[in-house]
Image (cartoon, rainbow, N blue to C red; front, top):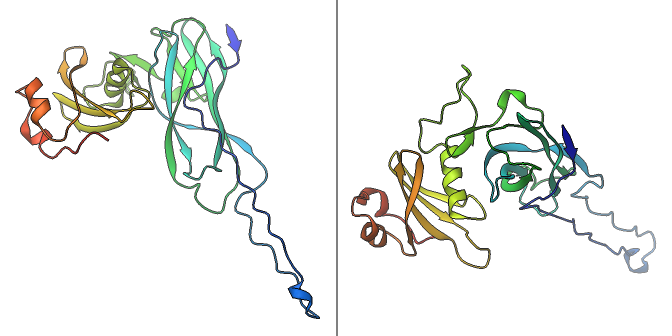
Length: 249
């Protein structure tokens, strides 16, 4: 059994709260005047660590890695710092780790959830090992076909029947080399359209997939709205699925 610190974390967010200094006067020297009371503090001073809500995992760029998808509190940059993966323990049959972040009390702005991804790096290939995050044995992750998901309550670990299941879509995203899951524009049993940020310095690219026996297969990269480019690459793509598509974004 190997226990070690985190090797690599991708998509980590580091946020620091801004400090506002207010200079108070004594009412311009008027007798009996009192200094104005300080305004309410929006952020508590004490940072505490919590386990993150894990929403999915997908294959990483290497056999020894996985992307862990989480929901973190708040859009305010002062809500979260140091999202990380720690306490990684590996055996021949499973990989265990804690997915945590630090936060502090806030009066508002930290109630909403925002998505993020962290990279879990292992010492040896993940392969078919079970992945258990935050000690949640009841929701262990298993490799199901090309992607990752939960086994059925009856204990069967067959690939999801739903082709739009996050396990299948996550595998498609990884195959493109995209840096995050992007936006799913269309998904039905036979066709998938994703807008994916392949590089941070470039606008999202639109990838179009058809279903094959082993998962989603990309057949086109398009830059325009609607159907013309998609149907030029695959005339069988249904017009009803692409006619209202906006430009990739």
